[in-house]
Length: 145
Image (cartoon, rainbow, N blue to C red; front, side, top):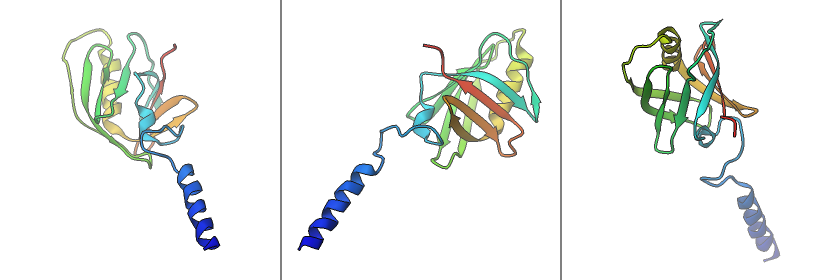
């Protein structure tokens, strides 16, 4: 009987240590940590080459319902995403508006890089999206408060 009580108490203690759905557990590859009001692009490397960034800002936002949206420089975009605890992410059904502007080269590089994204990780408050080869990397920061 005493052994049974110890086992039950151990299980209750163990249950208290397990992450609960909807509770943020920090960085790494927790898909819930993708959902901040918006991420601002701070660095873009395409096929190993750094792409210079200028105004306007490029952003991305992930929602709980599996939607992704953002600003690509001239145009806004939206689509769907799926992310796993293992750091895998896929963006699909992406569409964008079709306005022209002077930052079209930057926008094209950003949207092309997003189409290559297969992995994500969070490091020190930054979101890093990478291609399968890791030769294309998008680094985002949270907006200043």
